[in-house]
Image (cartoon, rainbow, N blue to C red; front, side, top):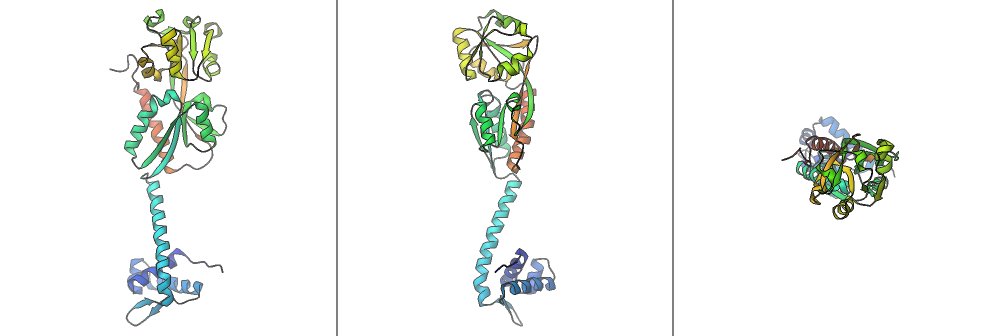
Length: 311
């Protein structure tokens, strides 16, 4: 049997059964008595049973109505709780955002961003993973992540991902303090031609060196997996690491000098990635908006502090 019972009909029956009066129930529901009576009549017609018994003094549930009322109240209470949950999600009192970033951003921007967002939205849970950039992209594809961070170049060959570039970070070079170039205010690309470069960037040749004239490019490049590995190699064995200026705190922790690279100045885009298709929850949308504002201000303020930008 197919029934077309409405929530208004159920709430009308509940209200009359509780209050024992069509007059009081119509006031509570902001309806005319005629409209309320029409809802009850339509409900009883749909069910094929009388739910209310009317006396000269009071309206009471029939025997069937008495058995039906607790079931209706359970359904309506569960619905009210579900709607309350949706309201909380919409008002950003609850929610979940799954994010990931590679090592350089996990050690610099993300801790400050996550801390600031949690303070602004304590009801939203953030789940953060520090992984290789390939895992960031994979997690967005398989929907185990909502938001990813990384270099803009990592998304250029990913048509299913949308990159929001946050800022462009100039490349600097990390050197041992004993290296003659460490005494310079800045380092020219051509001065690194004979240096051994430890590169942790997956797209170093395609996204960085292609912006440097061929005659000025470093010739000795050794690939490693992590920026900390590259910095450690320089600290122990000399050479250089080319990295965005945001990694200054990591460079400083290894006791290395960090100098801007010039002639030419090359910048690397830092981006936030999301999937192109599919609706986002209010919590994820809020995190995206917050991240864009925070990251741009963070970069504009020179945070983390680099030489000449901090106390």
